[in-house]
Image (cartoon, rainbow, N blue to C red):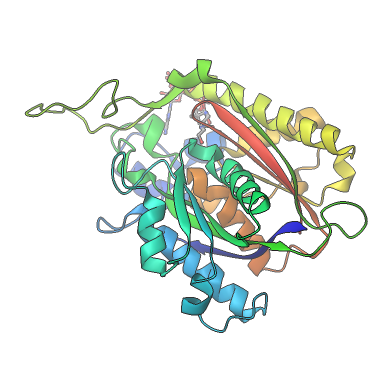
Amino acid sequence: MAIEIIATGRAIPPRRVTNDDLAARIDTTDEWIRSHTGIGARHIAEADVAASDLALEAANNALSLAIERGAVTEKSIEELALTIDLIVLGTTTQDYYGCPATACIVQDKLGAYNAGAMDITVACSSFVYGLEAAAGLLTVSPERKRALVIGAETLSRIADWNDRSICVLFGDGAGAVLIEKTGAPAVGPGRRGLVRSVLGADGSGAQALIVRRGGGRNPLSAGEILDRAPGIEMDGQAVYRFAVAAVTGTIEKLLLYEGITISDIDRIVPHQANARIVQAAGKRLGINEEKFYLNIEEYANTSSASIPIALDELNRAEKLRRGDVVMTVGFGAGLTYGGNLIIW
Ligand code: UT7
């Protein structure tokens, strides 16, 4: 029995904001943003689009692809949606504060009436955690066969557009994968699917990347006048150091636990927060930069959506072939980190 990714999808808001667009209104330059992060543009959702809308579009696209490529026997999205047993949705920008889970809104709009639905909120590591959680929940129950794992964000809503150290970094978008419990072997020759994951956290760094206002610790009060909207606060350099160590350590652990070397890996799909983080980790481990898939130039940091968006781009471009060994590596607020090893 294997847990395989049988289809992927993504949703990218059409409105594209370049570095030069930002430089026209705040004190920054295309040169600074590119040289410090590798970012060239970001896509921003319209005001009436929430994370669940992007998640729904990405999920629909994944289901369409599954039908188109003959990965399922169902012939329509409606029919296929009814076979989904679980929706796990990673997001830092839920439609509603606290409840309901954004996954439940997607479950209803998708017509996945037989699915359980829950959110995962470990920021940029949410997809990595979500894939492992969904795979585990399929594995333990004979009744569950299919799950959607989604990462969806409207980070533009929690970025301070007057703070150049924050707003240049983030973008909106969603990615989704449809996973299925199949009869393929999970071990030995010809094995496929999610082979293993590493999940980690270091809560001592919780303050380094935080949305401080609005939660139970610092609730918003009736009548309070806010001088700025609750948004992301970040100690960039502390997070940078953590991120390089997290990417390096996660890759090393996955290789060690699996008893393989970097030459056995065909693709590494890292969380897209800063190209320099990936380059620094690659240099430390002596990994050729081309092994890493980077699309940060176009989308900036889309948090939990960045890895599934990248997987969908690779999958649709047929740059992932059956049998390829793919590693995901995520890191983010919490602080959290982790990675998945997948045989495509
Ligand atoms: O997915 C969540 C995880 N988040 C991350 O992984 C982010 C990790 N951190 C980083 O990627 C980097 O720390 C940043 C890209 C956020 C910042 O790069 P940095 O090289 O660490 O810059 P810095 O914060 O040390 O700032 C250097 C200078 C400062 O000016 P002074 O004080 O030296 O005069 C900043 O004010 O750059 C200035 N600066 C900018 N200048 C132009 C900061 N942001 C900008 C900007 N444009 N957008």
